[in-house]
Length: 331
Image: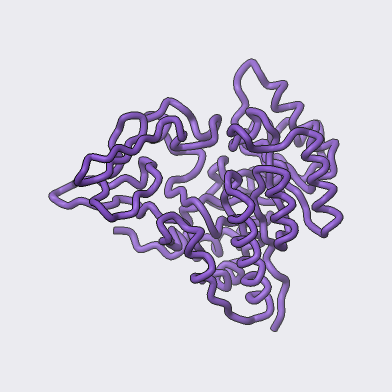
């Protein structure tokens, strides 16, 4: 029996990526302004106000929606930058704004009560009480859930809340509760809540020692790879450590999230929207991943099955993937 398809939410770090995502079949695109209000404020990425409006118009003409992420935590003494970003989103034709900072949520609810608000994963709302609080006090219509919940936990939450849920299904895998991780801040001195990245490229270094390749983050060794082993991007929570005479990965292997095989279970759990990670990715990546998941989401809605592993394997880190906490058996 056919049922309503889950919403496919796709990233766009540039106007070209936005158009690619729309053309590939994205229902919704999320992106941000080219300033500190955006957790992916990297050189060469993001949108001017004019580009954002053009992107919103392009998406609208092709049946897609745009979400604007104002998802960093505001800096004391410099609130005007964040307030202006919220004002600009409210004045645009964007479908919704994505917020994490509780003060900014209050500002949006007070100044722009008609603005649709989605709660960012950076708010780390991982239980029904927290989610209902944001929905009740600030009118949040959707929450992006942290990547630390099982499918069963998501289903239980959906039975107790009054708003929609959105979950990550592909791309980088954060194994901590987003918004609460202090590991990278300790190592690099930069906060993911403000700078938007747990392993800044400027802190990453690879050194060839002949017998092995060593990856470091701000001078701290994260991993050592024997000759011939693929080297992953170094993040602290996915480092290889020695403990009690054994060497291995404590939390999760350094691979990408791929939940394509469990889309039916996520739909059964009451999930409204499926989110692809990767605003820093290029057009080729976007086209392949979005087209693949468009087929998969439509197939699930129609009660059909589809195998995406072969199509998506080249897009994953080290050509390996995991279902993460959705079906996690902890070591």
